[in-house]
Image 1: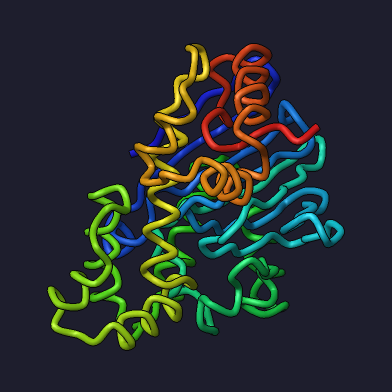
Image 2: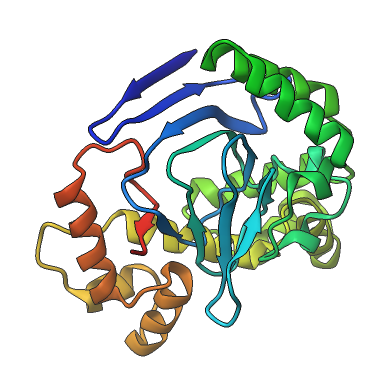
Length: 289
């Protein structure tokens, strides 16, 4: 299945849902070209790994507030983060990418996912310089976005490798996702007939974070996505529904998750919706400009 459109600020976005054997690892592959609505975006710490092959000028990526932005010329691989990160698009931009499930990046990595937690890698660091250069050349030479996504899917199938513990991590992560992060973590190991130490180790190797951290990420994702930014907001109620009885603790973690205070988050979200309604990039990305 494939879909695509061009929006009001000249961004072409084409999406392709892969078939087996990638279907259980990947939500979709996509092609993005044009002028993004903002040059810099804040990406919350959602359970959504990314793999992007860049075909334009370098990206700028910054994780946390205590470091400067780094250039990523060939693209990047990002495992599930523990805090908000900043992504800077060149103008214009052109890339193909993959939206993965939390466990979906591990079969394409030569290292444990934990090594990339809050430390995005370049594609060259993952697949090597010769292979990355050859893939970028083939993608850039393709005639259509559809052909590019087929090429990328074929490359991923070719690189697919077995990962120890992938099945148990996928099963337990799915249980966490289905409950929005509310499932008791202690119950997971019991259900899987595995020790908590084994489960935590497999999670860090496959996803990059522990089950507890993944559950927290899902909980915050569900909480933030449920906020209606067009209506009055009772932050005490939002915090309570997220499982926080200490509102100060909730605000602290909200800022770590989104990079913004709750009040500032609403302002930024409203600005994006006001300036670019129904934009291809609307959803998680928050303008940092």
